[in-house]
Length: 224
Image (cartoon, rainbow, N blue to C red; front, side):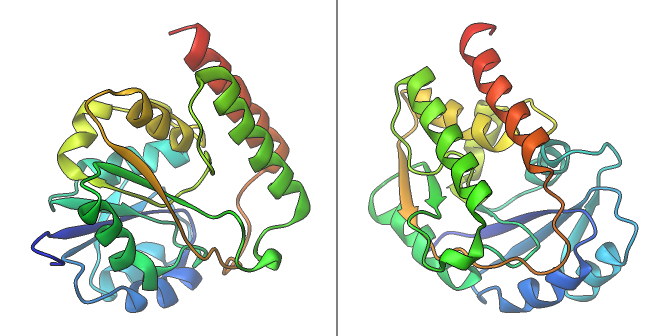
């Protein structure tokens, strides 16, 4: 518990045993619940997560969004914090981000990675892809956001059912933010975090995933 609020951490994982060994033990003691959404991993992700005290939710349907939907539906605390299992998102800033939400009476906070604290944490093509997708979000929806693709969000858990993002893949990340921004009853904000180089194998297929994200933005804007 932190500032009178219970906290759930939700981590979607596909073959992230190497990262989880470092991520879970570094979580602050104020975290009440750790949920690892195992997206049909073929390594020891689930065993490592359980050994380190996490609740494992198994999701056989492949996809970043599929894993998140399974994990987020299982969260029971007042506030949910999301992050990847590869060590890129800062566990030492969880309380800072939760405090940011509470102090400003916000409902949903997206943790912006830019400007990068460590330029080596993201290669040039990924930086350009993120910039393009963030600009596309602004151009299509007229809402300014610093990092439309961030995978670290802090929000009041009860809002998840209202947001109800649907995408099963990488666009889930941009979808949940857009729905939060567009909802007049949700107070949205961004805070800066220190993004880090990942631990383990890269899963992102940048060009394929980037184009899928861009196309999903167009569909979300015009084909709803």
